[in-house]
Length: 242
Image 1: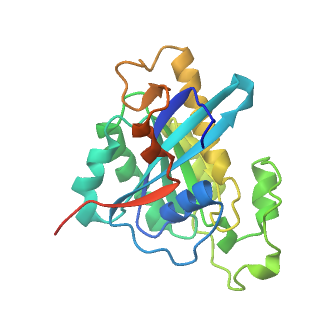
Image 2 (image 1 turned 90 degrees about the vertical axis):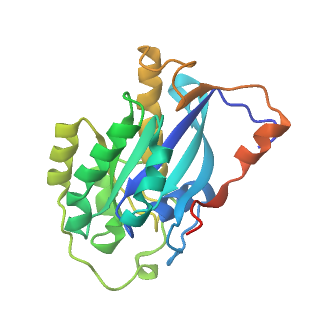
Image 3 (image 1 turned 180 degrees about the vertical axis):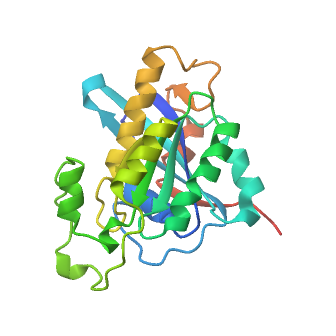
């Protein structure tokens, strides 16, 4: 990332039940790859990504904290919610339980994150229940050239348990952005982060975020040796010793 400058740094958290694909979304964002069976997240994992918002002529650095989805790590992960400006609230479209539990996760995030938090509801794993082309058309997404042929996906189909309409209604009621995605193909993964980043920029323009008081939104500082650690695409943080 040497020589690349950015105007803002946004703190993002990725939350939701275990096994909904949070780590896979982060790996897809930062490394542009998919791991079929990632290790369970122990505490929190970190990744960073530069994204460009053309209409704003801005480059934004996302600092993303992927949090564990099990109750045993809840007290640890809550500490990473503090000051977050953006949140991906993730559920599995083939798991109704994971969708119902988003209400609890959302309440937890809103209690600890920045009061002006931008949250996007992400229905992940659409590749398990329908063709990627169908989802892409529904959300008017940009074509993804890296989507593998259908034959490379699993032949087994899972039944969708959460409809688009139900998720959209929940998002509207709670004031959330919404998109469905596939970490496996990459469908709408970057789009989810970009939508949230655009919303944060709009809030900055309206004065909702104070650069000196909002830990989740920071203006870029001149590059120093201390910034190099943030340029690591992905690093594991195990946050407990028990």
